[in-house]
Image (cartoon, rainbow, N blue to C red; front, side):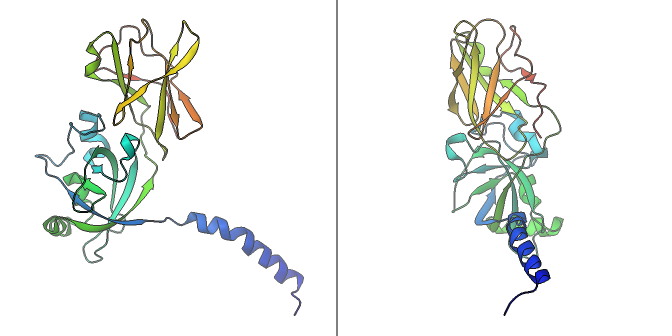
Length: 247
């Protein structure tokens, strides 16, 4: 049986549109999640990513330690949507959180702050019931991070030794990992790589005097360079605005 022209055209349109329709669907991975306790419900400043106080309060304290998603620290700063799987108790949108720490136990992918875990429930009563479960079945999906401010460079307090420089990069939007950080060497007129010391902390021995210009790689082929250098009189524990915003 031969198809008429209109039927053929309609079939072609369906074939062309089908991949786009498929790509619009979000795919969630099934896992388990639990939570840890803090006095105020926020995260912990001692997280293994090295974020310090930022790792306690970012996303209004909706943070988590991850295990399989840790990836030797490359998973630090990744954002996720996490939904629990008890229809009578669980909110359909769940919690949006940031990975700021390493944590594992009881076959979980997420050990969440109390604030993050409470967002799994449909209401306050449901959230309290979920906390009594302790560990719940969940599904999760990586989502782009959404910060309104510029990317920041935070100089770690360990950089008090003049022969050592360590930095952590904050407020990186999107859904790509920071895979490398490089420092411009004026004398050699070249970029030189920093070492991933631990978590999201990158360091460099014997940094150059004067201003420090950094760039970082998102994924494997996208370099982002700060619009202004870190000033020559940089201080350990200080945070500097890059004037760079990622959309």
